[in-house]
Structures are given as structure tokens and as C-alpha cells.
Length: 421
Image: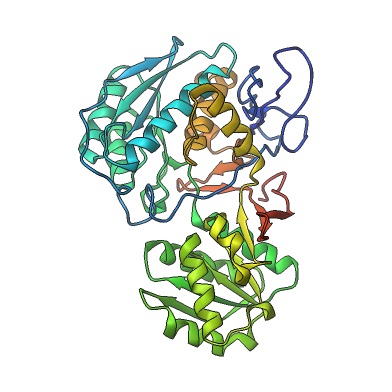
């Protein structure tokens, strides 16, 4: 598997970043330039991790096709970066309107940064604009494969993934997309994104290890809530627990909050899964309904990594699953030094994807992007920590468990050093 990048390799020193495991992998610091991903298949390794899951309203959560967008701009011209023999397509909505173009530019920068931090990569990035549409994505993918791309990184939006996948399958190549909609994943179409399922599985698993058995949940009635619901109802019995109370809410939380408050004495754990402002409103609605939330362990997802959550008196002591913030802090510093601006949170996905294919290209020869290599069960480790692809195309991540505090999150359980079977 692939691990964190060594900051001292280029100078001939030894060292590690992140977990201090001493193995090499995805670049986690400016200098790990020996192999931005010194691939070590079958050798589990934990890398430096990252912080916040993207907002529910942004990018490509299940059921959504794009972020808030204004009018699209003129199509961005295709560019190539690097002069290696192995060609890799990077498809992003560079000319889409609104937040989409901002995210795309930041991810483009991150992909180029990964290439620059990898010593002598035999890689050439073919950067294509899909304009945020399926038609644009299909055209970009076709152009890329016609130019010799061996694998496609992107697109960002769920609705564009099938269009790219169709082109990729016709050429027998794989796609590593950035959508968070697991319904578009498939064999040969892998998602390198922050999936709610990973958050839920990790936080329920941790709750079980500290003796929690009776679970409740109060979730939003939307696509994100539906994904969390399915994962929650699978994870709880798997860990020896039972779901005692379960409610969903729309614009009005009051009725659902009253139902949960009435059942609070029969549970020891309550999952609230929503973005920062909304989850604070949900907790406040529970308090208004008479719930004493100090009597239960509150659980959340990576969307809790938000200043509004940390400032909420009601949510203090709550636990949520997310990548450890150390990796993103390191990445963000290097990015700002290079580009003079803050990266979007999803920029690390593009960085890790490019670093991964660069390392596979170096270490795996002609098998570099085969299914067997991409589905290595030990996984890889990058800026956002341990990850691996599943045969059905979704990913698993090794996440930390964080506790809500007024000064920001504090870790209570580190990311796992390896995956189980």
C-alpha cells in the first residue's frame, strides 16, 4: 500500500510525516519527493490526515449534480503538464459557474502541485474542462483517450461520471472520480472522495468499543440523510447494537425532535448528521423539546468539523469521525506558499489521485492501473490518510475520532494503521 511522504528524502535523510511509521507514500510534505507515493503493496501504512468534509450544499453529494453555480464561462483550453510517457487525464469543471469553477481551479492547482512534488515522474497530465456538464465530460474524456490517456481522474459531479465511464470502458481504462454519490461507482469507476458511509461506520464502531449499545438517530430528510440512514442501520447491528429510535426532519424539526426527546431515556447514543449550522439547530430543537443531551453520547459525521459546531454549548463533548486535520494543515501551508491562496477542501483529492497514479506508474510497470493493483486490499495512504478502493467502486477511509470542544476538535482515537479484512 502507499503511505505518507517523507519530508527528508531528497536531502538523503530519513524521516516520516504523520504517523511516524517509517514507510513511504503519498506526499504529505513539500519534500517527500522520492516517490510521492512510494508504493509498498501489502504493507499497511497510515499517512498524515486531513480535516473537514465538504459542506452538504457543495460539489456532488448524493442526488446533486453541481454546487451553486452562476453562468458558465467560456470553455477552458486543454493543457498538458509534465512530459512523461504515461498520460493521465484530469477532468474538472473549470469553466462552470459559481463555486464549481473555484473548486475546479483549486483541484487543478493541487494536481499540478502533486506532480511537482514527485521526483522525476514519468507522467503527463492532460487537463480537460468539462464545463460542469455530462456532455462536456464525455467530450473531454473522448479527447483525452484519443490523446493516449491510460487512466482518467475526475470528473467532480455525479451526473458527469457515467458519461466519462462510458468512454473509459470503451477503451478498457479505469476512472478515479471525485463525486460523493456512491450510486455512480462501479467496477472500474472508483470514487476518491469523502463518503458519508465511512464516517458512519467509523463513529458507530468507536461508540461500540466504549460500550454503547442503544442507538438513536435524528437525520435530515434529504439525499445526504438517506445515505447516512442506510449506513447507520447496517453499522449498528453489525457492532452489536440496536436502533431504538429513529427520526427524520424536513424544514420543521420540532415534531421529530419531540419524538426523539421522549425516547431519550432508552438510548445511550444519538447520531445527528447534518452540516454545521443545521446540526446546531437540530441540537437546539432537541433541547427545546426537553431533551437533556448530556445524558447521551452525541455522534456526528465529518460535516461536524465546523466552527459553528465547536462554538455550540449543546454539542460540547460530541464525537465525530473525520480525517485528522494535521495532513490538511500541512498541505494547505504548502499550497498557500505556492499559489498565494487557500485551497478548497476537496483539493487534497486531486493531489492524492495524481500522487497515486505517479507512484503506481513508477512501481508497477505495465500493470500500473490494472484492477488488481487499484484494488490492493492493504490500500494506500495520502494527505487524507488511509484509503482503499472496493470492487464496487466506493472507497473506505481510515478515519480518526474527534471530540467537540470550544477551542476546536480534539482527537480521542487516531486513524487506524491498517484495514481489517
